Length: 91
Image (cartoon, rainbow, N blue to C red):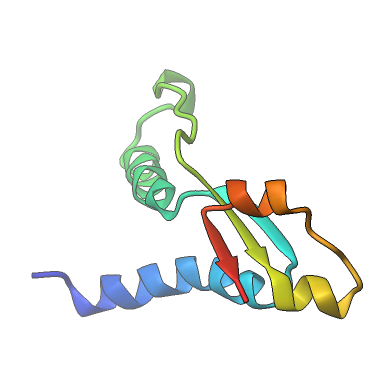
C-alpha cells in the first residue's frame, strides 16, 4: 500500500504540469513517469553515491498537449496537422 505522505508529495510534483495545462496554449513536456527515476537518483546521492558514477538517463516518453481555449484567448490558430499530432487536445 502506498504511503499517504508519499502520495501527497507525488501530487505536488505533478501539479505544476496540470496547472500549466490550464493556461498554456501548447505544452510539450516529459512524461510524468520521469519523476520516479529522478527520486531514485536523489536517494542514491543522499546515501553517498557520486553523481558522476550514476548513468545518464534521458526521457523516452513525451506528451504534446494543446489547449484550444488558451490558444483562442491569445488569438493563436493551431493548424489541423499540429492538432492531429497532439497526445491530448483540451477544448
